[in-house]
Image (cartoon, rainbow, N blue to C red; front, side, top):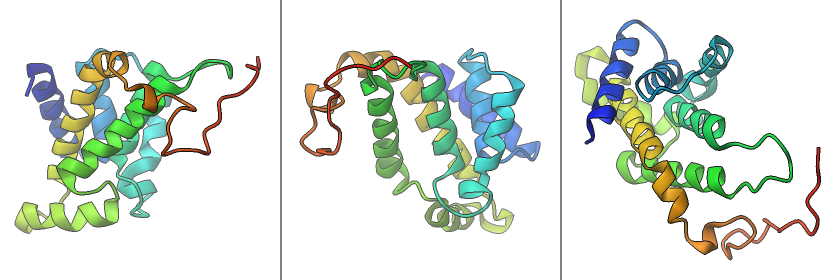
Length: 172
């Protein structure tokens, strides 16, 4: 694991111990260590993703914070900008969560994390491992985009036939 990723994981754990929730801890740690300048508004927006969306148990807040960071760094401001880069990174993030944690839904990850934490009954392992996955993806992002397979580009994947290439770009 790269030093910057290790520092990000350690910083996330510091936030967890200060009672920040998963999405809050991860986005704060990643933004600080990876030098991503986020406003307090964006940091506050991450709060609602805790516990799989306000405690609902849906997608993990750490995963959601990763998607927020990918979108912040690679998202578009105009509708005529290609969506391939950030869409691909978000798909890779999901794949890495699945491969390394066995899923990305809080309701499935939480019992696993609670078993690992013993008497403490917390999601510390998911905070740390999830943040490691997010930070490593952000470090790898420029290379991943450069090496993106042609079939992963918007409108070219046989696995996503619903993605159609617009015939004319629109400006908004």
